[in-house]
Length: 263
Image (cartoon, rainbow, N blue to C red):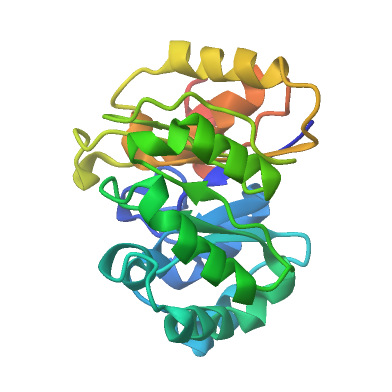
């Protein structure tokens, strides 16, 4: 299995001086991030459809091999609950045109109140107009998404049901497609002001994820995104999972400085 492991976003003040060099301008953060990691999930698209000027900058700041995933805007998934959203879907897709060749997945994170039965006919309409260029993981948070009917539907259509580690969600982690999309989210107990350092030790959970992934033999690709709320520092969480999976440790400038200072 190929693993693509990154973070849910890159623009966090708490990473300045812990992941990013302290004197690095925020406008240079993505360029720096993409020299360390090869994938990120764009979290900001959940809150607003980005201007093409911004997306063109994302493209210019990242190498050709770099990959993005992006969350569908909340106006589609949460405000309109997938109903009569063709206009917003087209606007979203158009906004991402400058990075089209770098997009691996577009994530439909659904509200906990949206059941499978309610969402199914609306998803079928949306998938009729979505291009085949990307995959579209579905993060269903209502318990009905883990029912036999939902899993059968997802398998029949090769739709990935997102595996997540998030407080309040009991995810049975069924394999419903020929790839996996995993979100290590945690809970909201870690304030933004503490991002940039490990605040909650989840080594055992990460070991459990490693065992789970190593026991899967019939899926060629897993995309894993680490959130700051999981342990406090997304890059460190992603790195920890990488090393548990036998991948090389990623070294960033601030880690080098800390290592040198310890002698």
